[in-house]
Every structure is written in structure tokens, then in C-alpha cells.
Image (cartoon, rainbow, N blue to C red; front, side):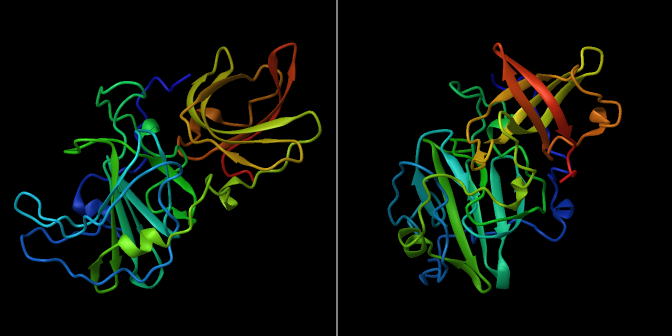
Amino acid sequence: MFAITCFILLGSPQTWASYGKFPPPVAPYSDADLPAIQADMKITFPLIGQCRFNEDYNAQRSGFKHTGIDIRAPKMTPIVAPISGNIGFKVHSFWIYGKDGYRCLGTHLNDDTPGTNDGSDNLDFMFAPNLRFGDYVDQGQFIGYVGDSGDATAPHLHFELYSPSGIRNPFDALNNALRLKKPLATNSYSFATPTDGQERFDVCKRYWNQEAQDLDGILVSKQYAAGEVIVITTPKTVRFKLKSISVSELNISKWPPDRPAAVYFHRKNGELIVDRVLAPGAI
């Protein structure tokens, strides 16, 4: 089930002043040649799965030189953090401030409801649900989805790298990057392991029906008893009926939409029976 309502991230900034300590890197916009220096950085390749790219950094465009590498991939291809650091984002774009002044930027993230070209800008189909502006993200952490937003003519991730001295050619860094088959489960997913017969779904709240005690959440990750944490890279919502537990102290109506809760449950006769819930931050 896809999320129905458009999720607006808390504190999602749209003016330059509101970016605070993490404004987006600004690439040169002119016909002058860009610095040819390759980015001397060890990165994780930003996409999971099949993709293609060539050296189109500094290629001539209409009135300017191309400031990054375009990595072509199907819409909704998962994007992971190429470097560790503090993440910033706005609609269609993200950037990460790494250590020692190194930064990266990606744009043309997905803006459509999956299977359509509706341009809905639902952020649940653009970014990972548990991101907040300024969060520290780990290299290899799932952060979003490839799309064809903005002036893109086909789905791709436009990717830029910056040294402390300015923009650099990312081609060699991409060629030498560590490629992952799946996103890394980082310390963000450190709720207690479920017991035998249990499962744990980590969900960001999307709707809470107090009267029916129904919780709708978008999946962030899941774990089976004694198993590894599985990061979810397809937008999916799940409904839990919480009548089997006491919810009075959980204060669900005030949960932030970008911080996951942990729902522990078991299955019985095709139903999900909730055993306990840990509110966001209760690790």
C-alpha cells in the first residue's frame, strides 16, 4: 500500500537563510571550463542496482558547462549516502557535508507517485522516511529515490563532488567507489531484537486513528527474531491495530513523522497481533 497523504518533512527549508549551517553547494554557472581536477575521495557508489554513466562532467550545455556526472537508472532506484556527514535537502535534491570540507550533491530525485508521471512531489516517494534536515547520515545509508524531476529528460541522478577548494570531477571517484547490493543498516536501526516468534517493524507515523486505535506507518526497516535488520527501499505503509496493548503513555498523536517507532508483533491466523510498541527515541 502506498502512502496516500503527502508528507511534508518537519523543518524542510525552502529559503537560503533557513538552510542554516548546511546550505547547498553552489556550482559555477557559466561557459568557462570547470576545474579538471578529479575528486580525491573514497566514496560509496550512490545507487543500488543497475545504472550507467559516462564522463559528462564539464560537457557543454546550453549556456553553461555540466557540473556533475549523470548516473542513468530507472525511477525509484534506491540512493544511498556516498559519504558520511550532515545531510541537507529540499524538494528534488540532497547534499551532504562530510569531514574536512568535502561535500556531495545529488538532484532530480523522484517526484511522481510510483507508476505515474503525476509530479505530486510526495516526499515519501522522494526521500527515506526517517530523514531530518541536518541529520548525520552514515556512508551507505538509504536516503532516497532516483527520478526525473526538474528539467530532467530521463530518470537519472545528477551527482556532484566538492573538495574544500571547490567543485571537482567525480568520474574517477565513481569508477572506484564501493558498490553495495543493499543499503547498510546503521546505528539508526538499533531497537531491541525481537524474541522468538516475533517480528519488528520500524515505522514512521503517517496517521493515527485514536478512536479505532489504528496506526498507519511507512516502513523504514524490519527484523525477524535473531535476524539481520532489513532496510526497506520500496515505499510501503502498514496498519497496526493497537487494541491489544495500552497506548495511553505512548502519546502517539505527538510522534514526529520523521522518527521511527518500533512495533513488535506476532502473526496469528493471518492477523498481526501487536505485543508492544517503543515510541520514537525510546531505544
